[in-house]
Length: 110
Image (cartoon, rainbow, N blue to C red):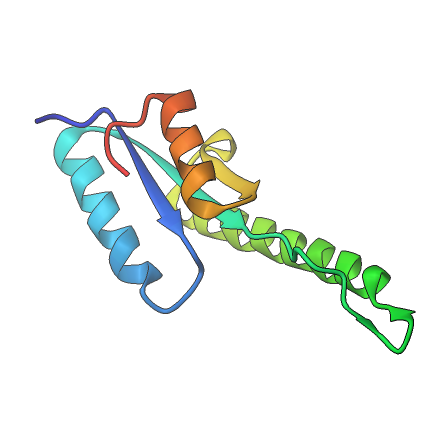
């Protein structure tokens, strides 16, 4: 089978290098377009203690995570020479978001 579009899902943990190398190799072997995705899972609970709300801190933490994810994706995408529109950072449940991107972009291999 020939793959036209390959999606590499990243969690920015230790095994990303192996996943990236495998995805790059498959894309190179097939002459495929390469896409990257990272999905940030939102912090679903605002913590409270003794009537104090930590909602502002949770919002600030989520904003910081989004910013860091975008920076990591842009740095990696630049290193790999992947166009900006193929460096995706989404919010939500990773499996669900990845499946949506696969449908939206017509990805052959994820």
